[in-house]
Length: 319
Length: 319
Image 1 (tube, chains in turn orange, yellow):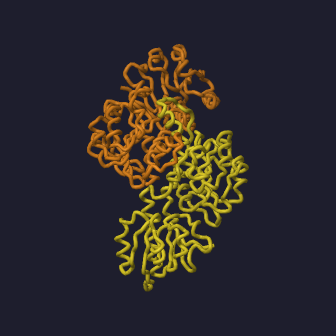
Image 2 (cartoon, one colour):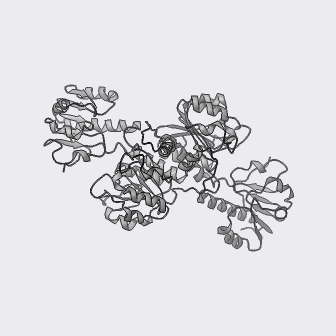
Image 3 (cartoon, helix red, strand yellow):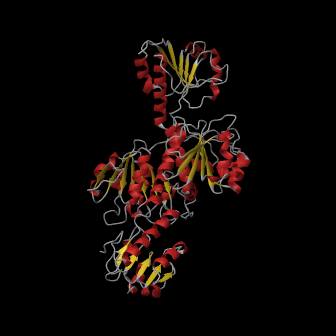
């Protein structure tokens, strides 16, 4: 093992930290470890930090003169990649890999809920109404398209396959085809392949290529009776066009964990769509305990790798 | 192949029958095939039938003097097993094997819906309320107990395992342990093993051993924060005791597709339990297209087997 790089001060913004503070101090006995939080971090704390674990407000980083490594607790890193946010030479790593189980399970749960009419039965329960709501669907033999095949998309593909679906995916690098995925396509083939899928599920981040991708024309290309699931970013879908696609077709239903705007204002028409299943951006975060442990595991591994001069996981190239 | 037994008249009560009428006539060109339905079948049709496919009203069978085989479209056969219902010598077969996909998927969908708070988010959607409802759970590492390991229970075990659960089961014959099940127990061990499970899911039929099995004392043995799923028969659970277990613990939630009484009357207190997910006995039936095809497949195979003197599938011993 190579000699340790000196890490004078580690600033911890991941909360809660109690469960991991012992391990952190044990692995870095000579470092000063400061426990703070995103909402209460001070400029002074940022200024002194060699390493930050967690997501500081991006505007604070102009003061981060000593920063060598920013290990985010999020999978997304958009707020930190523009030139000038991080000081020269600082490394940026994210927590990709932590959110796969939580978000993919949420997506499958939402999809099955719609397939089995559970959202309608919940409304009936409120009305104390015992009434059969007709045919239900199954993922058996359904054609599912996953947009984005990172850890969330791959885990979603695995679960959908367990229910008998045939899963295809859209990804940047077509050279490797993940397990559980039968075919991969580039994003620009989307308009062409879209009509053949019973379910389209997106975990795409926000980017110039994805913003407004599901506009009126794209939604019209979807298969009649199909379902759109979005657990990536709300900006993917034109909300007005989605409303129309839910009211007049071709969509049977949609499951949204992210919206545009977000939060969805109380007077927004989407709230009233009974064939929409809406959750308030709760698929990810630390709402599932396992995600929290996975974030800490990645953070501690990368911190050790940094100190020992080894290669970092989930390194983000700055713009 | 042995010579065909003569089947003069086949009475079809499975509806719809159009998709399979051609195959039926092709396989039995010399038989008279009568298409009717459970709600409109006549005494005369019953009297003339050598074979009935479907579920006739049990009281009509006293007139079924020529009946040799009753192939049910249901998995349950309780209504037809008491002495004196079927004429002497008639064989009884059921449609076990047809309902596995539909009912198991419904059970997993209900369970995931509760784990991810989707039922609460649906209520919030109705109120146009964007609000995080806190921690969500996952089947990863959870201990699940399945009561009944026929085709529904086994398929449920497979799906729960795909989500990372560790599944045990209760069954009559302990000599064989199905795939995806880590341990099997006899029913009389239930009070002893119950406290260790995060989820208890029943697909048990109604029988003297199962009626009222989940009474107040049994429900109190369940693990604090656990979930009870019932897609078997409503008589399994004492509804008043369940109400209390949902209000005061130990249950976190319950998912019921069957109730006692059934249908649940509008003034029943269970309707008002927000931590209960209620569906009106819609997990099975023909609501999922695949179930319908599976029932017909079993019926046609057994009809051929009967005519050719081969062994029947799903034969039910009469009391």
